[in-house]
Length: 595
Image (cartoon, rainbow, N blue to C red; front, top):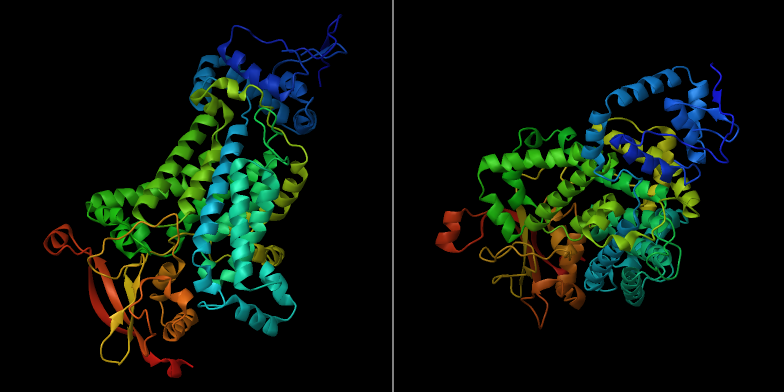
């Protein structure tokens, strides 16, 4: 190796000499200054050694412990130095092109991005979403899992413990093991509301996020089938990872915020990448041809769980537009997420496209807080440089450079534990039949009850038929009156409603119940028993109770096929739906029969 040149009067600290006339150099020297934390003035070492080209860059970056591997590779890895110098020489000969590419990908600012604004608003958004989730559940928790509900938690937990013994505690990690009364369920919901408000206000965010995760996990486990939706586990995984992103301080003061954890930011970006890519890939690997021939939206608008009026209008659109929309959805879900890891401008394009897709989905369907949560994760793609250009730049002058402190250690442990599982979950979306490695399966089995690392796959197989269960009651077995749900399709002339971000969990569960039989859904049998017993908490889950004074003597359920009307049919009849009776879902039963 050729010995480096030396200067006779070396500087007191390393000195970088660069071409001040080069537009490309001027941009990147600012990024280099921030990376080296100002330890180098602008490369001559204090001992007089002088380095040039790529080697000079690597030597200068060695002042950062995280960059010491670069000069080591230059000295010890075969071919690394040669390739680096070829690359440096190529860029040096094409500076104008390099400057244009830099402007295209980064804009005018190529300094390492900081994310103080993104963290601040992401945590506020997460607090609002937690608030929505707790309030939405609070108003229906008694009827779902309370003492007089459909699936009482005070009966469920003892039954599980009787079968599994002490293993039940680790499989069902919930505070309801200590207390499963209605009062305690309300305490968990009320506590969740209180901590959500504190998080929105920026008071003790890390403590609030820990309490919110424990409370919502406890309610999710207690909720059984009524809280088994993908947005419930997405909220838990997001909330858990956010604990490591949140500043550990009692009150957030702008300009005095602790550094943003690079490791925690990586975990949350990986979650967004995993969520989006898996949701797209599983559609193509599920074996459902409607995703390949782009006909999924021919069925989706009217077959989804709780359509909206906008969904009805979207269903009237031309077929070519529906097919184009499917292709757009697949591109945004499968290709665009890779731009999450790209420089600023492609990253912002990815954020914009993913947010746009979530807005369209939210308008045409009631998916409670799922769309808001995905949009909140997209906020983490917006760095302070972009936020400053939209607002007063002085807001960000006191912000410290992106770096890790105490949270780096705990977040790194989470990365080490969960990254192999996340990698396999994403791979499994591409290869559904692939068998899990034994050690990964063992780790996932023990982490899965806590919902901190999950797989996702929305609309893996498109439902191409809409079956609706209409529950009816009778006092004499002759005259039958229907129970009207608040949001589920029933009355043909009632327009599809918009209840998001609230989730009426019984209405949602009725859609899943219609995909099987009453015998395959034990909760439905318990629902029938509650109606025959006149349980007040359960009756309040309905929009209309035809037996307000005395419960019915008999109950039955009829299965119908529902379909949106056309624009002409709606204009003539005023109906939003048309239906066809398919037969009995639950035959006529009395309380004595079911008992």
